[in-house]
Length: 120
Image (tube, rainbow, N blue to C red; front, side, top):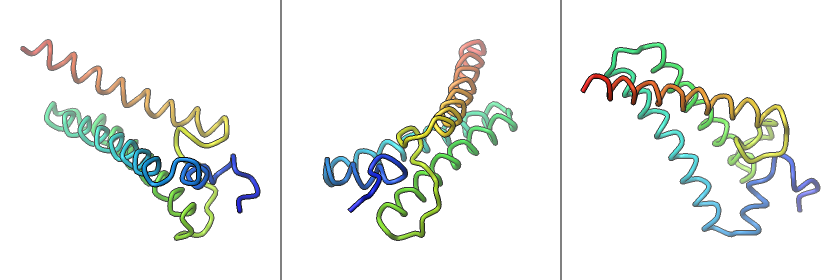
């Protein structure tokens, strides 16, 4: 029983409504975001852009750990921390900060692609 089904327990509501397949899809999508952030960071390392590499990997770690803790709380494995599920949970400031982080990540990737395109 969830008293407030729209707050930090969105994953539990998703599991109740969509089942195991829905939860697996959400976990796969979050792991894909983290993988791409690390891939972008690795491309920065290959282009000798150390600061951008650290920023992109930091954003990947940030989103991955936040999602991991929220899912752990929803499963009852971790104590309640108050962390929202990135890009999904209710709250204006959390979604704004997550979108800013993803925008920075997209900009780093765009600059990497332009640098690779110009060097050819």
